[in-house]
Image 1 (tube, one colour):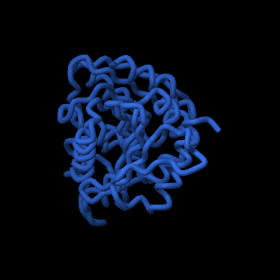
Image 2: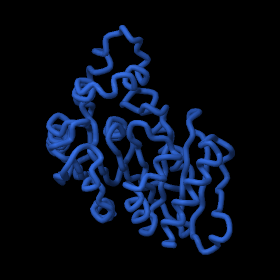
Image 3: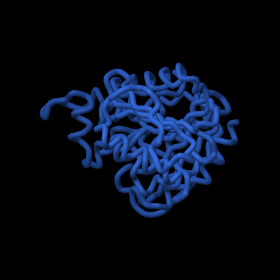
Image 4: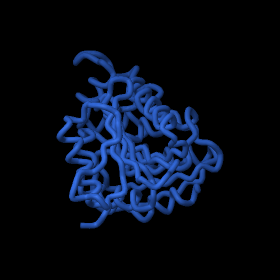
Length: 268
């Protein structure tokens, strides 16, 4: 089996077996018969949320923080066939991978943003100082908000959400958004949507950013999300590339392992 594929399989099994809880934060080597697998796996908690880190055993300061999409948790995120190629490619190139459950419905709400910032702080305590962001769908709302708060080397968004009102209007995730912001069934969402439509985008000048999105996406509409927020990032001085994909939300054309790696390598 391909080394990175084996890594991800072991990682997913360990996470599932532990229920993604904080069952200790010592690195967990891959068990036999995987003695040739050069990686360590750690499970821990940040702000009471399950988090995980997979680190190549060759010394690295580079870590990709994955900010997950709706319905994902650690045990599912690292077993998703669509993203498998991207994770394999990054691991083979020597990048560590990290993620937090971030209160599950991380629709850009303050609790989940603080979870992501706490994860980055924990990773830096572990010697991983070069942070790269990979944000998928809903995760874009957290991913954009860490910019300007922590140093990020490069930022990749796969059909990233950045305009909460447009997602609310689609209607598929109103229950999740209410839960994320603690809104009752009768409460107005205006307060949650205000200031996140679009969300704050404050990249440092020259930040390499790339977005993958389809004009036929019926879940995260491209115009108010990728198109508008890429334009804002450009105006703020980021180096932004937009890749037009095809099909509806989640189409396989949005997953570009070589493109993600190229973006991250361009930042050093």
